[in-house]
Structure formats: C-alpha cells, structure tokens
Amino acid sequence: MKIRALLLLLALTVLGACSTARPASSSLPGATVGPGASGADHVASMNSSRDIVLAVANPQEPPPTHAGSSMLGYAPPATYGKGQRAISMLDSMREHYGWHEVAGWPIKALSLYCIVLEPPAGMSRDELLAALAKDERVALAQPLQDYTVYSAQNTDGAHKYNDPYADLQRGFVETDAALAHNTSQGDHVAIAIVDTGIDTTHPDLQGRIHDASNEVDGDDAAFKRDAHGTEVAGIIGAIGDNHVGIVGIAPKAIISSYKACWYPTTLEAGARCNSFTLAKALAAILDTDARVINLSLGGPSDPLLDKLLLQLLEERRVVVAALPPDGSTRGFPDSAPGVLVVRVSGPTPAPPGVLSAPGTDILTTQPGGGYDFTSGSSMAAAHVSGIVALLLSISPNLDPNSIRELLLSSSKVVGGMRQVDAAAAVIALRNTLSTSRR
Image (cartoon, rainbow, N blue to C red):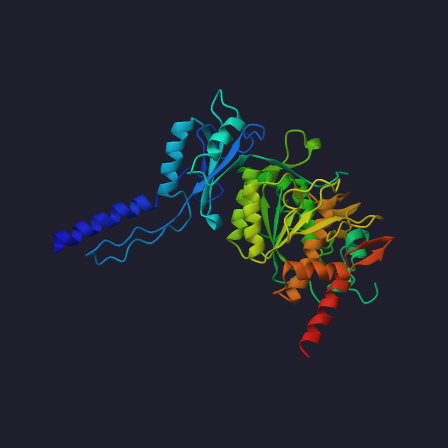
C-alpha cells in the first residue's frame, strides 16, 4: 500500500508540474508571441497589407476519468489557453504552408485559438487565403485589418459643481448632465473603454480607472501618454466636485481601460488599431461584467471582430460606436444591428436610428494633467456612453434597443441641432417606470 501511495503521489506531482506550464508571457493568459517578435514589439511588427488572422477550434476539456480509478479526474486549467488539438493542428498546418507566426491568443467565448501569421516567401496573401479557405481545419481566415479612432485634434435645479472648468464643457452643459445627476451619476455601472491608453494619474481620473489592460505592448509610460483614450475617459467619468478641472457625464460609473490602439511614430497620423488588438480586447471584455462598451473607432467589416461583437450583443451588452467622419462608409463596429451609433450633432438630420451628441470643441482631459478642446464623433460617442450609464443605474435591465429609442425620443433641439439630452432621458425613464408600477 505504501508503494502504491508513493507512486500515486509521484504521478500527481508530475501531472501538476505539467499543468502549470505556460506559453510565452503576454498581456492575455495563454497568448503567445511568435519567434520573430517580443511581447513589446509584436503588434508594431504587424503589417495589414501582408498578414492574415487565422483561427482553429480550441476546445478545452478535462481528461476523462479512467475505468477502475478512484480519482475524480483532473481540474481544468485555471486559465483558458491553447489546447492540444489546436497545438497539433497549427503545428501541422505551419509545416504544410510554411507561414511565420507573429502572435497567437485564445478566445474563450468562441472556443477558438487565433494567430496572426505572415505568408511564406513567394506566396501572396490572397494565394494563401484561397488555400486556407479549402482547408477543413480552418475555422476562420481573413486579412489583418487596420482601424482608426475618430477624433479631430486640436439649468435650473441642476447641481452646481465646484470643478472650475465645468461651465466650459459644452457637451456636459448642452445635455443637461448636471440636472440628470440629481437622479443618477452612473453608480455601479461598468463601462469598458476600448481605445488607446489612458493617463491614469491625471488629477481628474486618478482612482477612476478600475482596471487597465494593454493589448498592444508592455509600455506603461506610453499607456499614460496616450491622448485619445484620456480624452474619452474624461468625458465619460472625470471626477466631480474635487475642485479640479471638469466633471464626467457618469462620474460614479466603474471604468475599465483596454488599450487596443496606439500612436505611430508620427502623432499627426492619429491612433490606429488592428484586428489582433481589437479581438484581444473584446474577448477580454466577454469575461467581465461590463454593461457598456465604448468604441470610439472604426474601420472595415471584419469576420472575427463581428463574431465577438455579436456575442457581446447577444449578452445584452450596450455597445456604443462612433459614426465614421464622412458618415458614408460603414463597417466595424457601426454596421452591426443593435449597436448604438453616434454622430456629431449637426444642422442636417441624422441617418435613421443614429444618435446625435455634442462632438465639436469639447473640453476634456489630456495626458500630463492638462485639459484641452477636441472634436470628433469619438467624443460624441463618449457622451452617449456616459448617458447610457446614467440610465442603466436606474434600470439595470434595459436592453440596447430600448435605450436607443429612449434617447431618440427624448432628444432636444440645442442651437438648431437635435441631440441627446441626459436629463430628458432620465426623466422619461423614471416616468415610464412609474407608470409600469401602477
């Protein structure tokens, strides 16, 4: 019996050692970085005119219990990573096609393992995609695509904030947010901002960012220098009544930051993202309880991103997206049914179902503790995300379509332009709830 017990203990020790093995470090559990790139520079090395996103099935099942054994089986791994089936398929396919893997990551919500790959020398991307389309082992194969953020650089009874720049906040004033705050400040509503990094040390944001995830690199200093995400975060959730700067539309919401966009060497080009970084961010959000996802960015339609977006919408998450600047080209994420699409308020009527919000000369937070005016549909979307949090704090079970209709029907004309109004939406919701309880 002692020998048997010793052998069992030895077997468990060996199995435990195997189960704790992990692939190369990354910002996402189970993610790997290809041999040609490090964790800090693999995103920068990607090329949207060359690379491919490939996905294979990645089921994660605990080994079956053996007959005659008194053991209950082994516990599944604590983190969802690359399963043996995915490893075998990708190894076999890499040997067959000769590609170079740039990076890989698991998507638990879709039971997939994805990689970004570079076609082998002498083979074009289109040729490899055509070959992969015929391979039964492939769950998805598509071009790696680029995305950009939408920003242009450069009342009676309402609570009176002591923040010195509050009266200069055009969007805050025009949407009657201070009046809405008499009823709701977005308490306990979780908002995920998918964008660039955020200056978490800014006096108006310090302590407001519940958690931050960097899906681009490991550069914490660059994360805090990023402008666009800092601007969006300030509009949504800047601290109120701290005698500093401005106040957010939803100053008591719970904010999470997912850096999926970065600035190229020339800042004038604006921040960019790609299929890889955005998919990592959306997959990570699916493992959280975030109710509102702010996507002040956009680009072409993308099969993988569309799958993740559909999963979020099926879970009744409220996705707020910025309308492209020209308003004509629709893709990810603004073309998906169920997404709340927001444009900058203007004198012309908005497209059907599209919300209008302040987005011109908006005063908000800047990296390094400063403030400045900025414009774009990115800022308009941020206002709507904040208002959505005010509504969900009052009625947590609201669905995206109900929220859209409520915001459209309660919109007001300000300066000749019809746009969302936080106070009117809150009052309309309270009246609806009061009537339903009678």
